[in-house]
Amino acid sequence: MQMQSPAPRLDVDVTREDIPCNLCGSWDHAPFCPENGRGLVQCRGCGLVYLSPRPPDAELYALYGETYFKSGDSRTVGYTDYARDEPNIRKTAQRRLKHLERYVKPGRMLDVGCSMGFFMAEAAARGWQVQGLDVSAFAVERTRARFGFDARHGSFLELDYPAGAYDLVTIWDVIEHVPDPAAHVQKAAELLRAGGVLVLATPNVDSLPARFTGKNWVGYKLSEEHVYYFSRRTLARMLEKAGFEMLNSRHVGKYVTLDLFFDRFGIYAPVLGKVGQFLGQTLGFGKLSLYINPFDIVCVTARKV
Ligand SMILES: [Zn+2]
Image (cartoon, rainbow, N blue to C red; front, side, top):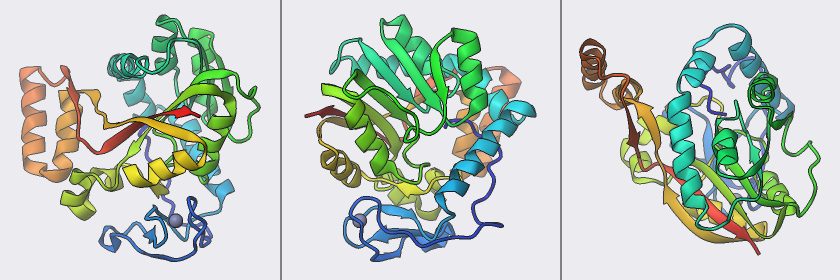
């Protein structure tokens, strides 16, 4: 779910329902960072941050489907950017694969939220047998046509895969979008063999950048569709509940062009961001890429016990 198409807003024309904590089941919550205007709450039992009330599950998924279709059909910024960013996405994938291969050797892998298949392509080149799925029909079609991979369209919870068959399940930038992240992690546990590895990444609402920037945190601003915000603590609890043992938890970055870097930087410092973008375009260094770690995206590696 990395495409940044103009997202449909969750706060218009939809009925909303109050929901219990996805992690501990409690209904007891308090407003969280109300000044950001997102309608977030924090569970008083376990500390999970989430959107409540929120649109019903079916509408959440419908919104994504529509967004993705549109981004595929209508030459929107989202699709154009994502496709053009392929070299950086693949470099980021290589770096992440090198790290996770410390814990599991290439074997059978499922990429949940595979988008256009760039991560799968890098994994396949390193000897992984890859399968993937995505809620975007467009992205899945494109993955099949270009790479010939086994990519399926649908929600992870609704598609059938063999239990105990996988060495690795990856879930990049997905769990913050879905109605039931705990069920995603539970399903990953079912599909993994004993000793198999799950890797997932998501924004860390408890990170120093999130704390220091408050309502202006880029994690709130960039994604209208985020319905869950995890911390290392809530992630660890969710994984342990599903039968995982934590192997590694760290903040990860990605390769970005300098142009995109200055654009994001401009969220915090608009003038400096604009100056950077202007110089990058004028002097021609805007298309250079570098690895940027904002230390607010947490990546956990966990083993099925
Ligand atoms: Zn809770």
